[in-house]
Length: 129
Image 1 (cartoon, rainbow, N blue to C red):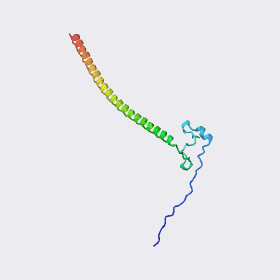
Image 2: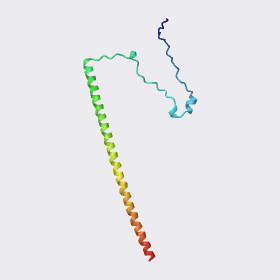
Image 3: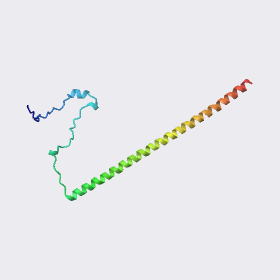
Image 4: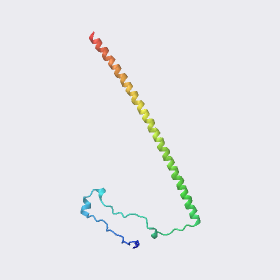
């Protein structure tokens, strides 16, 4: 019986050259399609970052600032939810008022047409006599 041992393979990381678009072709592209020459602002790798060691007072200040920021964000969330709820209620109220207004205008039109029809009938009756 043969035993198979898994050996991790080491592969070289492939590094691709940046895409090069000729200037003549770039000039023909619309503004939104032109490549941007802005390099990415990626976060530095953890091994390239410097360790920040804070003094006890700095730690307390940092924790306090984080706590205040959390409180502010929670207040903003609550206010946003409250505003959304209020806006929806106002929209429902406006829809009801709009419906009532449409119904009232419809009744007014019907009444106006009824009156006009009565006048026409009266004029026709008088014209026949």
